[in-house]
Length: 254
Image 1 (tube, rainbow, N blue to C red):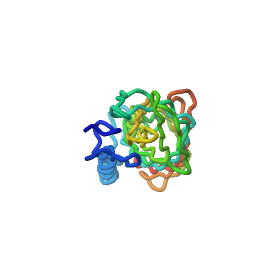
Image 2 (cartoon, one colour):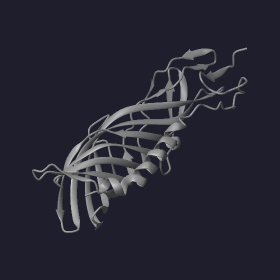
Image 3 (tube, rainbow, N blue to C red):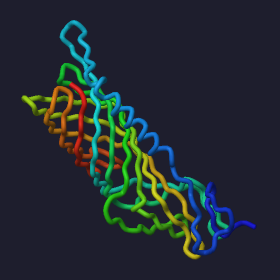
Image 4 (cartoon, helix red, strand yellow):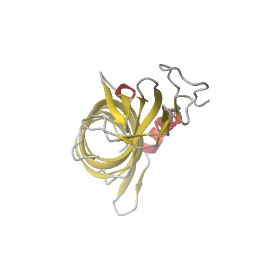
């Protein structure tokens, strides 16, 4: 006998009662992948940071590695979509879009790799980051077709993949000032619940391309280690000027 309400791909072994919640599948591999890459970067960073190359005509290039923690403010999150088809009261709903749930504040950790040329030009190459909701966030009620949906903003998570960017750096004694522009692919996901009398839990997700400016003020502790204050206004993420981030960064490199 078909349950009154369930989500395709859930681990519900019997029909749920009107208030029973089915356990949905969550992306479990992303935090583990981030931890492995972060550990590899931290172990190899001193050796990589000291490797510079001179091509014989005065051009010097070196590796640049970074680790930062940040707080991010997003005034307008993108539209989310259900990751699986839903069946509520015998009605099957497809994987359509949900209305945008509003804004959120998040904390995050990022690691990145790049290179410098002539100690002036900076080219961020790639990086990964994870984020999670921070602070008091409300329930957001919306509709999925004719079905009421509750989106739980406090369960919001993100995974980001940084793409190649470019910028420049100025130095004065132990201080340096750096500005770069870098695009990023970012995936958000959160828990949601559909239905009123009989409810079905599901995972809603969204993927977006963002472009941010990164402004750094750094103080050098030794030839390859610097501590930085990072300000990162969001130039574009679904719309122009959609929030920004502030954080602390540790850099390894020339």
